[in-house]
Image (cartoon, rainbow, N blue to C red; front, side, top):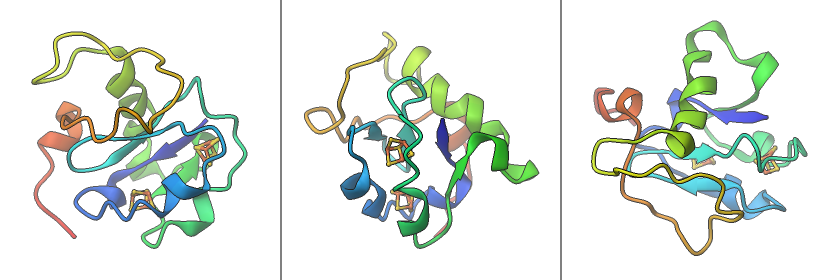
Length: 112
Ligand code: F3S
Ligand code: F3S
């Protein structure tokens, strides 16, 4: 899967969303998250991000490796302010923005 990492926080450019052919990039509150089971690894989103927040999972710089697990947690775990996991909705358009973030993102100092 491709992964959105820390540089997206508080920037939320959304150029990536327009590129994704399967609509698997979901908006939280302070950043966007790629659904690891819905992403087909086409790579179209990666070059359009102006802050280089998107990486293939094996190419993540070391400081962004935690975001591989964190993108998945956004869908498959409970979150502060969201009691039930989101699961695999099969498309972001009718859901975004979801108004919540993972703890990793929510606790990040303001940036951007
Ligand atoms: Fe974020 Fe870059 Fe997309 S800033 S919303 S990952 S284009
Ligand atoms: Fe979509 Fe990017 Fe995956 S465009 S299919 S999230 S590689």
